View 1 (cartoon, rainbow, N blue to C red):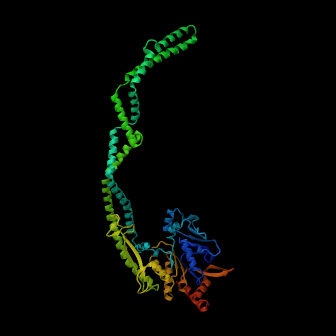
View 2 (tube, helix red, strand yellow):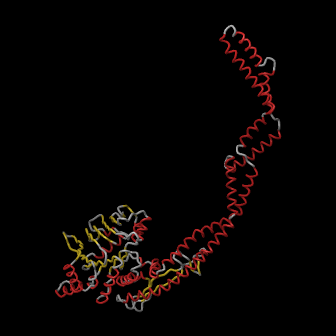
Length: 567
């Protein structure tokens, strides 16, 4: 519900604030006073495109601000939550229009985009008039209106749920089939890689061990000669190192009898002699393990070449080769299961399609029955609003089928969408002899407002929009028809906050709240003012609307009677 509207430096309005309440609020005033400017301001608040030309002369910036109360169950609350906008304390929308063209939008004092504003405000208010900010004019919204009227939301939800469940499966099936078509060559490659890696029988760290073995085999003769010579020099020949150390040890041991300080040195020499003797033994044992085998060397070289090739192809190390082998095995297993996956996915899709087709047929049937009732209801409503010859039709069209459409999204030459197989449009012929035309192409703002009023009255208990604004609803009517329009607005206000701009006292008298818009010249500038009317002031305004410039006592008495008998 719209609580507050503030307008500054906008057209001929310098500074204007209006507080609105529940029920029917009527705005009256002489032609040119600024009523249409207020409608334009609300349109901008709801996300319409701004223009610097709307800024008041001599000012640089125009500012529009509106405060809405939003119930927790409103779709606006849900959408705002998705956009991380907190509406628990209401929705404050502010638009800054600058001559530079750099306009700004603020939602709850946070900078936002016009797109964000429009997505939220779509469920806040609608304006019926010649330049309507109105979902009912959009053909894509007509199906929702019909479904609201027909009470088929549960069936529509089933269609949408089934449709949404099918979409990822359709994408999955397409991917699986594409992989199947590509898999022949790819599978051959995977099988070759898997076979090549498996047949290599790789052992982690094997390449390093083989490198060491190759070096020993290549230099076996040199190793044998050099190690043998070293072993002999240590212990195996006359005058070997161990022999000399043994003699030195005995001499020092003998001298230690003279000087005890030499005893530790003598002991160390003896230990060194034993250590070198052990080293000589180890070298002799090493000599026994040296292999002179050219065939083994060739085999090692071939094995290393095989490992080098694998490392070059699969990542540079034996670890990466083994990892690739495991990956190839898993991919082969997945590729091998493609036919089974395709069959399973097709079975699931077939079952879902059967269910979706049933839901779509039921929904379409329900819609067509509801369309007949809606056509009759609209024609009865507009007849009571002075449009007795109006014809209204709900025209069905199938959802177009794209040549590349998936067969699971086609039903009897119609495409399937989340809303089913139907698209509808509201067509109307307000006058005898006219062709039926789309609702949005109606030229008369008054006719359009009354048709939308009729639809709103029919949908009153089902609509989620909180505030309905009617402009030019009284164009081309008067007398008894105006009375019926006013009474219908009053009844509609039992379900929604309704704001109506009117020139007719027969409509204005039904308002729970009455505002007068006027303009005056102050210090050489035209200003628009708005005043809440009660009591005598309201009677006087109705008298003006009845009598014109000169307000007679008879007009005032009539106005008083109208207010007293409004019900």
